[in-house]
Structure formats: C-alpha cells, structure tokens
Image (cartoon, rainbow, N blue to C red; front, side, top):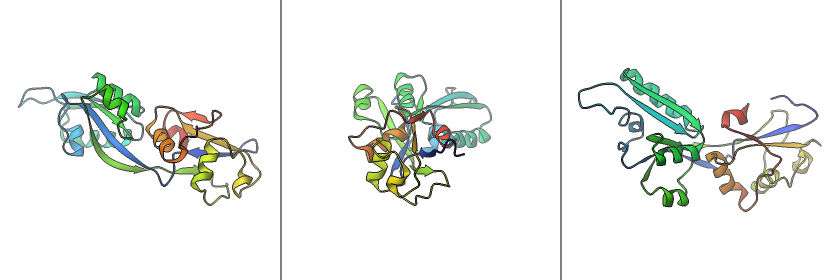
Length: 212
C-alpha cells in the first residue's frame, strides 16, 4: 500500500491475540454435518439414493469463503455432477440466510449470538476451524508493536498520530470491516470493550478489501 498525502494507513484485520470461530450454520432440517467436510458432502444432493447430481448454495463470512470454496472444489473433483456455489456477504448474512432457508448452509467467522439463537432456535452450528486475525500496518511505519489499550484508543479515535505510540509525526488512518462482519464483531468484543470504532474509519465489505 502506498503512502500518500503524508498519511500512514493503519489496516485492521483484527489483533494477533484474537481468535475467530470459523463456523458453518444450518437449520436442523438440513443435512447432518458431524465432520467439517460433511458441510460440503452431505447437503448438495436432493436426489434419491443411486442418483447423482445436485446443487448447493453457501453464503456468508468472507473469512470462511476461501476455505468453503476449497472444500467445495475438493468435493466437486470427486463428484463432478454436483454444483456448489459459494458466496460472501458477511457472517450476519450467512446466519440469516441459513435461518430463513435462503441457503442450507451459512458461513460465520464468529459464534452465534444469543439473540440469533433466540430468534432462530432451529439453527445448528459446527465449528470447522479456528482462524487468527492480525492488525497490519504499512511496512514503512516504524512501530514494532502496540499494547491492547493503545490499539483500542487508536480504533476509538483517541490516538490519532503515530507520534503518540513511538512513531513519526503522521496521522493514523483507520480502516475497519463494516458492521455485521464477524471479524469486526470479534475485534469489538476482544479489544474495543465499551468503546466504539471511530466514525471516521474507512469501512470495507471484506477482509480482502481491507488488505487492499
């Protein structure tokens, strides 16, 4: 990422100390997923025994999307008559899509919220992986590390210049995921506490967009 207009950009993918639950959720009437790979093996076909083919649509977390795509490709390689469409949209989209039956499987890079379990009691969640997230800055930012409190203050807009944390006299530009993102939710729970992410943060719709 280039440095422009004398500003050094701070990119959020989260914090090294944070851990995401990479989850696939579905309603109880969907196929059972006792093992992670069954998320892409049990549900695709609606055909009778002995028949081949079928379609499966998966949507949700952009964090889970690359993993889900790899699982889908591995399954399709052995079952070429099956079509699996993996889409993003964010963790909340994945949960809602599965709950409303828009897709039989929804991806979420967080645990189900209590409110979601109350609203959608038929949802069942399967943790298929654990994913670390990290705070990233431009290589030319000469700051080796931040305390948890410093990270919170930066994302809350209380620390606005790198000189406040041992860096150069340059403004900090915060980039964050949008509301509804599992990555953002985990970051808010583990880092922000009662503080809110500053409203001047540049919000991005996916972790890939944050990285870019």
